[in-house]
Image (cartoon, rainbow, N blue to C red; front, side, top):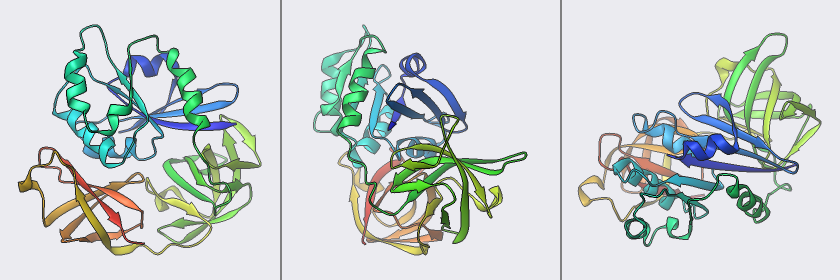
Length: 304
């Protein structure tokens, strides 16, 4: 079974026509299962009030569906985030009242300039999704890495975590570290689309029954990995600001990092961010100033 993960903004009619609502919180997940493709789509339920709803929804996207019927500053934040993360595969949803020339001016020079401008039947998108999935390379040879997005307790089952296999092949009964806590957890069972499996390849959306960890040990964005990863107090790397960000929003001061379903506070000094609490190392994070306009201002490319 092949898998694909997407992000959607201001395109509810499209999403509801092609997928079924699954998990709902400040982000809502929609899912669709075809014969050889399972598609999961994140939508930012609490955005624009909660900026982390947007950044979490974009974190894992392999394609993007963006409505451009409301040309406001919140759409601008979506464009900035997609641009900074180089999310260059997707669709722009238009209607009969959309000014295409204005859209072309807005997206000029951005990753969205490569998006297909779409105003057809929602089902027409499905053929494109199959083509997108075929172009994605999965790293099944790498060590197992599973990112958790929701978790809960189930009577007679115990701790259940929902998430995605980022790399490797996850196997039933495998023992993994829950990072950044360092606790060891055993995978008691694996489900995909409510069917039990003995293993799940990279890209899979999974539900896991876990042994030796409790829901109180987890947060969104925690990782199940083959080795213990030590969290870091300081993020060091190259800070890059988006071209649309005014100079007065750049520079040192309070900052939030957002990426891989995490949103944490720190203090920026030059190319270093001193975190309020230890954070999981990642290749890059978006930089957010929640009281500014725009709130998403850049990214840090973390040194390895």
